[in-house]
Image (cartoon, rainbow, N blue to C red; front, side, top):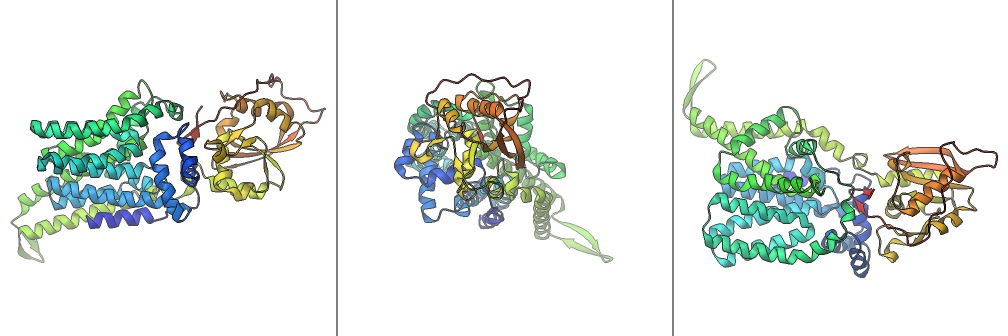
Length: 523
């Protein structure tokens, strides 16, 4: 266990300070620094599914509010998960398989990606791996008391992210494949029922906040193929196909397959199926299922090594013209060295992927870069308009770039309003605020400036309408998918484009407050 944990810790700490947060990380960073009553108020309207994680990070960031500290819990959780995967392999198939499974988990690019993300997914993966290990112990213990640790670990894991509850279905399949007696089913049923009962209030509240996942689309075979590659230590080439062949060989190890295969297949399979009716699938929501893949690959490698060792355990090799007798210990040592070399080669093969993950530009948004661009381009006192309002996260997470400018649409701050990025002025008030302005900077997501984008929020429609009717673009700067535009008021002699007719005044009222998910607003 120690070796995989040390490798995972090194990979997790490598480049953890990448110099910029992306959208979802910035939400964690900002919400966790609010007071507990402010966090509680927010959860009534948005992000209830992440409530326990925000409260946990509130304690963590109280030590030191910084980007590295933000990601350290995920690094530590991934490190623990690598050790737990190794422990599962040892219990199921022996020390060599355990060591191989732990190392495979550590070098998988998807593991390293979420080990450096200030979100809950690495913690959920650790909880699921721990609960799976406790499941095996409870099955072997065969006492009612043995199920309490299992439930005690799984309950907070599901509260960290409610989709972790799908692991109960995987564990049920495991018990069926292991053909456990009725008393084991009864113990597991009580523990699973308690977890489900505890989760019901969160499920009830989160159902009213389903707009957070409205950006998800129905997954197809492309998403399935992408998930398969992400669960592999290599996403292409000989590493991917070699891992796939070894995984197939690992299915022949009955006890290992009974635990690893349901964990690998059942949660993603259920989520993909449900998402055909109501899209809920994203690969990070089932990161915890990845633990099944290295267990099967390592079991397949162990089976292959056993076959080679059996064939060549006693033989003769010619060395410098002499015949040398080779025994069982020498063969095992040779196979062990070969296994280490294969793992090193697999990691080197995926090294470019690991390096890209350590770049802030590789994440969906680079809010630090947006703030730096604002510092260079904006003048003190300039009004700024965020399109859509989620773009305000750059100013909230990195206020230095926006400290001297005026957020012309903001009516109430994010903490004060109990929202993620503040409450904006009504459409009528926004028009009045923009009326005396001769120049305004627009910070916009690239999709928001596309001709076909039609937001449902009346405030966002008003922003676009006023910009089309009364302003023209003077200059534009693009950085990491975010557009920074300077708009200046049209002179009377200027003619608006032919296809841009005036937009009627939108009715005033409370503005819609969007919700962040995967760094993108609802649309």
